[in-house]
Image 1 (tube, rainbow, N blue to C red):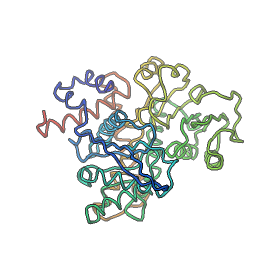
Image 2: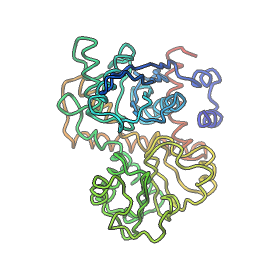
Image 3: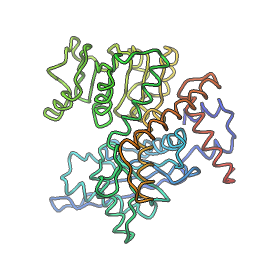
Image 4: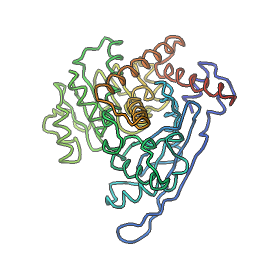
Length: 404
């Protein structure tokens, strides 16, 4: 809401549009009763926020996490609205979540929870209504269960209702690493603006799905992965870390901490406290705050995570003259390839990886240039440039529909 208020003032957004954009169009909270392996019934709480569908069906992931809150889900659904708009997809924004630690569930319990969530919301989703996808601690297997449950409920095939599915049931090639790949295309363009070379040092906070893929892709591009952190530790080697080896180490030990190939001269330091050319927050929201942002020493930040920088921290980064590529643009590769998956499902015609990557790079480059033009037009930050582009597109669709 702080970001929306700021961009509304910059672009002189119509008051009626601003009022309509202050809250989701629909917000659902559901109780999901699940029979656990011990025979006891446990009630889980789930949410689905449908923020805005002026440009097309709601679109957004479902996260399984113990810290999911209604406020978080609403915020994420708003970000999805701007994200689909900034890359010019004919989609709106939504988000879902369930309060659960999936690591504490057996596979059977996790499947029953996934199906239970769809049983609770299936009347509000569909290929032309609202299209869920994977998010934090959800994956293609869970999407497969959700798709199957939805089709059982409606009695017919509808592969386009869920994206991020396994390939065998209508998933798209490239989807697994699309968020990271899109961010690489964006990073290359931003680095060129700053005159950074391909051997620039990179720090990645969060070595989960998106963060690890990003590290591997950038390593292949010639960047030096100098700092990596997860929830249990930070490793550093300015000569460059091998992301494949770090990933193997994490699989074996559960963390990047104590990786043999690291030269950790300052143990205990947070990822943000190390010097690097490019910083990539790739974990959860609110990672960079007013309390820790002062230690950041970098030229470029690529927001691979959703909302990793608080508004207060953003102001400090602005004063430090650090270029921040906002999440709604930087991590939009995932939703772009999700849209490609919907198109392939609708036509029953599936594309090669080369075709998808070509269309993804074109979409990301076009969005970057358009957002940069808005930044220059309004003499503002890149974040506000991207927001200006997105909010104006959503507002135009709302006006053309006669909502305001």
